[in-house]
Length: 347
Image 1 (spheres, rainbow, N blue to C red):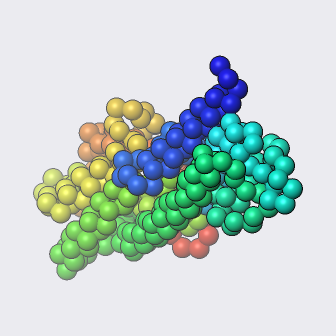
Image 2 (image 1 turned 120 degrees about the vertical axis):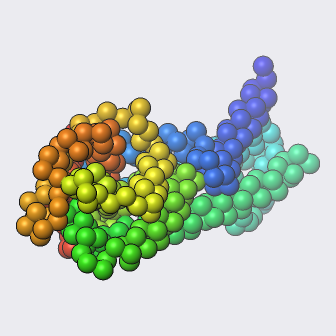
């Protein structure tokens, strides 16, 4: 096969693959393209490795923004490579503007760079009908890429802010499951508590669907516990499980809004990739109830038995907590103020 034809086919293939990945990632609500999936999965694996090695969450804060910058850079570099291969199929297609001599390989890379950026430096110029047409297409392609990157980055940042806002709103119900249960159990709080659950459920659904459109959201870790959505939803779900299953039989809280909230949390678990059948982390210990008993909350005497049917659900919640870089002690301790605990999830 002619070498020029090989260059042309190879370049067109690279450009097509990159743009399909960009379009799938930025313009659909069903996840991301193959390149983005590899980058996101790799960044997630690296973040968990960093957590195990360093034992601190400080460096995790850079993972999300760093991955976004890396992905945009890879898109640009691959697109640059693709157009360089395409123009390499035309040895005399790019000329020095002053001397009229054919550009070499390095000069073509320079020409492609300022063409994709639409700078129009003018040191080189296309020669021939096909290279002239390709130059216009390349310039338009670069403009489209930059526009789509911005179109993707801005809603992604907004979705991160929404997650943090919802997490903080949940944290206001209580710093740990015992505080949430006590808040709900206090006289006169039942209706307002359920109304707050109803409002939170709507926001959690929004976060779940945003995660479907932006899988990279999982790489934006909260620096403080009260801004970590997975951790706060786990605290809330533990409290709701106590209200529904962990109280004495005559006092169990059967409520449509509580059931709906736990169903919404289940939906969130599915969206973040934690289906029941695919995860088998250790089941965490049942919540401590000593504080609740001192406050005269009618907790069941054998909470272990009451929570036995919730083992698989709680295992999924444990996986969610670990995925966000926390351990189960963070659920029970309720460190929702100040800096994060330096403790990390076990490997």
